[in-house]
Length: 395
Ligand SMILES: *Cc1c(COP(=O)(O)O)cnc(C)c1O
Image (cartoon, rainbow, N blue to C red; front, side):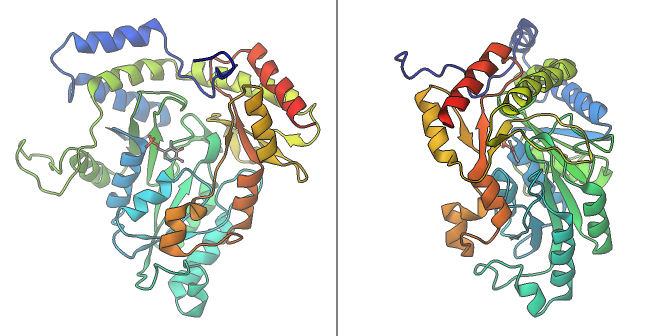
């Protein structure tokens, strides 16, 4: 790799110590590389931390969300209200079951789904008729069934407004799924992300707050759902089934013991990791306030703790995010546009006929947001390097 192309600062980095390395080695010195004691411990560590009854470890956040979709009984042609301003996995898990996503737009400050729009969509979809049609995709919804659920996403480490979402869900007897894959440790009115709906899911890809390499965890306090999802995770074995008995058509979504051991040590360090992310975010905030034309991330009034998944700066109108991103690249600063809206991904346009301007706030945020290098091991000097390059790139 030539020096000219090496990033000056990595886009993201896991935060791994010798304790993690030793914990993984310890597993490798046992015969139990899967379905051993570590997964149980890791599940208890996460469920205990957030205050949920159960944790179910899985091999990705996406797998966890898929099992929540199954637990909510979402099937072909069912309608699910969700957000287009997210990582694609939150919508893909609906498509896996041939459900139909009903997108509503987001809050311009936080990027989280707007509960008032969820309420309007739910009311119109439950009533049916011509009012309902305006919420549905242009195509791919010809055989639309009933409204079944709401799937909200806690974007960039900030929970959505679950008091309002739970109220709408309760009023119309809908399931509510929380995609908390970006928000381990975040709090809404003092309550932990992941526990704010019927089921929550965390993800442990290396850029998340804690990592297991690949991995995820469902948290719930619903005993029926817990049993069902635990069964589906392991080839559909219901409690009491033997190795070759499969009550349900299941999946292999299990997390291995090396990953669980790694995650357990990371969870023992969770407050340290979150505090370090908070410090890096504060270094960025201080500097961004001094650069005209760019805003630090905006927090909602109900976020009592943000858990900083990524640090997304937002440019004011008149600045071309893509030009600035290109110049930053020339300065060897890696950056990423966040998010490219889900409804404008090619396969979504093809299947549902979405068009530009369908969800203007989502699209505007998607055009103005730029994720800057961010991790818990970032130094103040590295933040300086990024911000100096940013200042120059905006000239
Ligand atoms: C990271 C993430 C997921 C899950 O990702 P995996 O790579 O499958 O672990 C799901 N939803 C959102 C919003 C995410 O950011």
